[in-house]
Image 1 (spheres, rainbow, N blue to C red):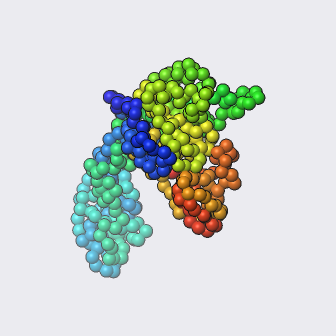
Image 2 (cartoon, rainbow, N blue to C red; image 1 turned 30 degrees about the horizontal axis):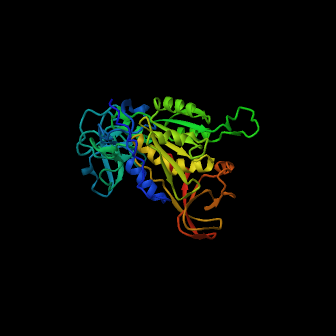
Image 3 (tube, rainbow, N blue to C red; image 1 turned 90 degrees about the horizontal axis):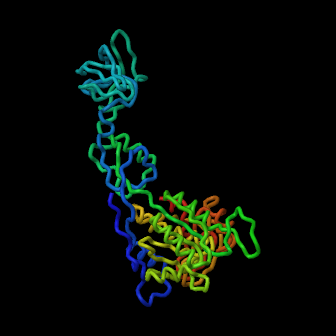
Length: 419
């Protein structure tokens, strides 16, 4: 199917004179320029877990497809149930079972044995629970009055035919697959999986299976981003480490841009002598450095290379993952055909004290214990152990603030970024 047009080179450019941009302003700007970048494909609904709907889905049939019994008992006509006291009805020969409907009709004075899930016979609108009856000599007896419609499920009680059941842009869950199956939807149109290529940068960075030499460090960012993007449901291609060589970087970027929809790099995006990434992207007239009033993070590189959006994340792992969640994930959702992400947050009491100056919004690594929010012992962007310890962020606003134990803070669980 036809693929959407690529982003324009200057789509990420900020107005002249922009200095430090508040987080909400940056997100609103990013939202305004993000659009779907992938084509669509047909899939069996049962194989669509985690995929994003490219069309609205309507129920093919009602659910249930017919009125049926919710219990084992006797199907009766409610006209026989108005009086109080003992009621006796004649048991008809035959029965109604799931998948084996009764072919006759129920009239006043009749009762038909019926089992859970069986289609309600013509003329019957109520079921008397088996345990509430006594049967003898082709008669069944029970005490009334009984409410009409008891122990039955109506046609379309859950979903009516042609009802909108799932909206375009929704990521399919196991419950959605069950809903589609129950309403006769077997084939759907989804967006192709967004392909995201990742790089780390720098001569000092090595893989964890290599013995380090003097001055070298293990690369945590690529494994971190790979697992994060995979958890988010994207196809991830690991292009390895970009060495500090301009020709090498240009070659690898060109190769990646031909294979993926989005490129994400970490580190090496400033204006130093060995930061070739900035120079390459500037040559394409697409580089935009967003100086965002956020901690950790600050500069975020946004560009378009050969028609593919490029996110240049900070090199420090904590800053990289924070910017990936707060800024990249909402845009990646839109690129993949889904909706802009607004992560769920909760107001919970703090189990810490914290003072901050005005000027930057802060995202602190945090987790909940005993109904209160703890924060990690250090705010350093290189403290990777805090990423393993944490289960979410405490989101502190830009203004000056002092938090005391017991005061409510805004907590965003990492799970809020999965959808």
